[in-house]
Image (cartoon, rainbow, N blue to C red; front, side):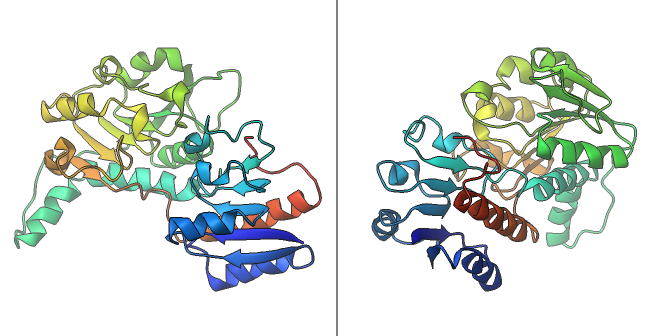
Length: 314
């Protein structure tokens, strides 16, 4: 019998039972909390063949684990950590967080354009007033940097709101739904220069580290808004804060930062109503656990049948 460990706090009892039923004939199943003491967590991993969740990569290397199914779309935290060539199969959760992240981007955009943070502050002081000017998204241009599953879902929503969509990608030979124009990443400065809203939805990793350097960020219009739901490492955080403080960028929606949690002394906390910080929560939604559960069930079946796995990156 194979041994399976699930450490996903978002799964309901019904979803855990569904996973257990899927593997009942060929595997023994155990579920623990993600916050389990690290010593006990590692001890349990050492007895398992399959792990589902987000364990540290060094907890997996050198064990009998043959399949690691994580829930996140990006897997940069597991790159170059000894998993490659170890015989371990690593699958991501690509598609699991897509809806939540896309809708989170829209929520941040509308909140900033309609000045909701300022109104929330007024509410605490019992102030009933208008705070013009208010913007509109209809007729504006959204530049989406990274047209993967999340970027495409975001593009679809932007188009439905009457926006023009420009995508920035590394592979321009593919067709991208819902984008009015697609340019190569080498033209990123030109693309964001004419955008009203710039969304970062690309993957992390070395390839995209500091893609939004100070030089690139300086290409943004002073009336443009910038949103990062990718990885903090994709952006020069110091340059972004300085440009926001100087009014060189109209505002920002920040879900990810270079260091998480964002340190209490970060200047980003003090930039006022034009900056939203949401604590790496964009992907979490009511539908995420069910989508992840379905992916887990499918991949466990494929693994047992020795079939090609979904979202396998190693």
